[in-house]
Length: 439
Ligand code: GDP
Ligand code: MG
Image (cartoon, rainbow, N blue to C red; front, side, top):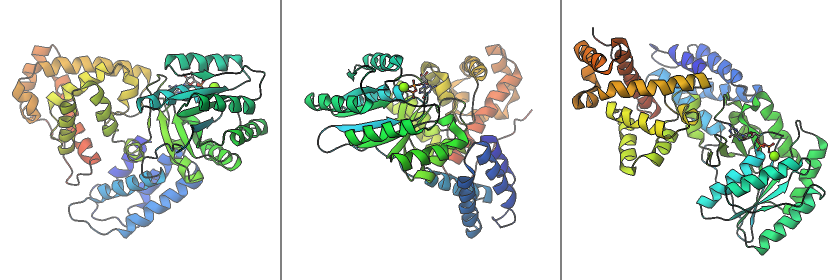
């Protein structure tokens, strides 16, 4: 999705204002990029129409270039399309909150049960899981094992009892134990079928759930729109959870859910670990889709491993685009410490989708960067401009770090590119420039 949209912006460079004529081509690119990202056609049509209407309506704003204006309009529309604000989970005021999970087979329902219990535990809420997938004994074992992992009780009644009966028994048990949240796992099928829907309806009737969350695999693509519509019409959902966002997903499903059902995505799964569940932030997702990297999520992750004031400082620098090599080093080291590169790398500005091979490459690059940054003087780290201006300095760093001059030049160029991207993301309209290195 990213490269297609970046091409769209480039075409507007040098134009004075947005007109009906000069947005035709960028809009065609945007349309193609969305279709390639597996957004369903009706959703794409409405989106493109909404953006075009607004773009032509806006006049010349001093100091704001048309391409930046279009980026902003597309960004705002994307955010709107995905629901605007973060949608919090709803909790019941009396008795346990009941969350019913539904979705096709293999999308991550059982994993989400345990992740969600773990997530709620951090908010001080107790949970109990109910094993309602009675078609495979392995499914029950899986939930029990995950429950042990996050230290949350799991209610099971074997494979001989009807799911709606298990739901009833489980709920009673939870009430007795004064559990805050009950999370019901259900069986999925490879495709939507009547048996699954009837079973879900029955379970829903018994549980009277506070939330019915449809678990959707981010890779679902074009079918997401039909899938969400069917579940919503048949059983009535209150929201969705988008899983496997860490994978090679094209993001189309994220754009369709709210538009076709009116129900928001509430949470996202970003990996297989129990910690990999987060609230869904429409603005960050839009930023990511626009190819600017998910800087805010990144800063948030970095906070887990950096001292608080360090992270605040970094955020301030990112926002003022004063980001220097010290920050660069701090950030790359934080990333390394975070361990799971795959998860984080998509959030670094300028790095879009990545394959495992690219991840290994990136890890190698981190070592390379560290060596070069360590060879810089404190002054050079604070003022990257010094390096942009002086080939002598770059040569010295190359020699001291045992790298080539070209590698040093690349690193310097990369820092300035990051500054510009960050600046764009933060909506600073002045627009930065990438200095050319003098020879
Ligand atoms: P269910 O059939 O819907 O219950 O799906 P499961 O919970 O059994 O998950 C199917 C597979 O997807 C398992 O191997 C999970 O580890 C994996 N999985 C679930 N969520 C995620 C995620 O967010 N990211 C990744 N990479 N894998 C996931
Ligand atoms: Mg399952």
